[in-house]
Length: 134
Ligand code: HEM
Image 1 (cartoon, rainbow, N blue to C red):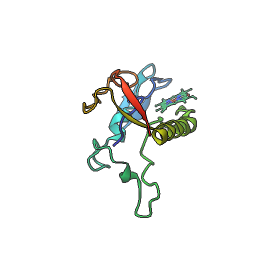
Image 2 (image 1 turned 60 degrees about the horizontal axis):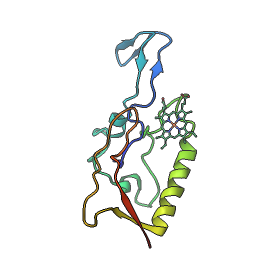
Image 3 (image 1 turned 45 degrees about the vertical axis):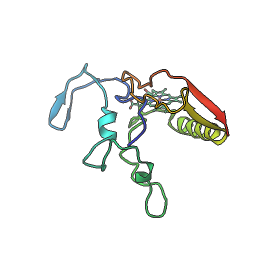
Image 4 (image 1 turned 180 degrees about the vertical axis):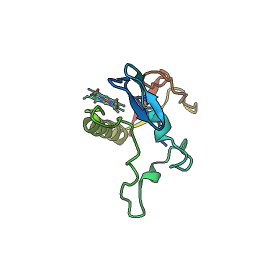
C-alpha cells in the first residue's frame, strides 16, 4: 500500500471514562493505541494491500480518490497537527532530491535492504547511498 508508515500504532491515549466500543468495555485508566498499520492495510477494503501501488489512489480521470480510510496521521481531535506541513515538506524534499540526483546503493548492482525496523516509529536500516548528479 505504502512504502512505509512512520507511526504504525499512533500515539498512546489514556481513557478518562468507561466506554463501549464494538461490544467491548474499555475501562477508565486504560491506555489505547490505534492499530493504524492494520487499518491502512485492511484487505477488506484494498486489493493486495501489501503492494506499493500509488495508482490505487487515482480514479479514471487521474483525480485522487479513496483516501477517507487512510489514517497515517491518526484521527479525531488529537490527530497529528503537523499533517499538512509534513506532506508539503515530504513532497518538496523528495521532488527536489529526485529532480537533481539519481540515488543508488553504495555498491553498484547491489540491492538496498528495505527491512523496516518496527518500534514506536518505523525506521530503515542504516545504509550508505550514492547521490549521482543528473
Ligand atoms: C510524515 C510525518 C508525520 C506522521 C506520519 C505523523 C503521524 C502522527 C500520528 C499518527 C500521531 C498520533 C495521532 C493520534 O494519536 O491519533 C501524531 C501526533 C502528533 N504529531 Fe505528527 N506526524 C508527522 C509529522 C508531524 C510534524 C511535522 C509535526 C509538527 C510540525 C507533528 C506534530 C504532532 C503532534 C504535536 C502530535 C500530538 C497531537 C496530540 O496529541 O494532540 N507531526 N502524528
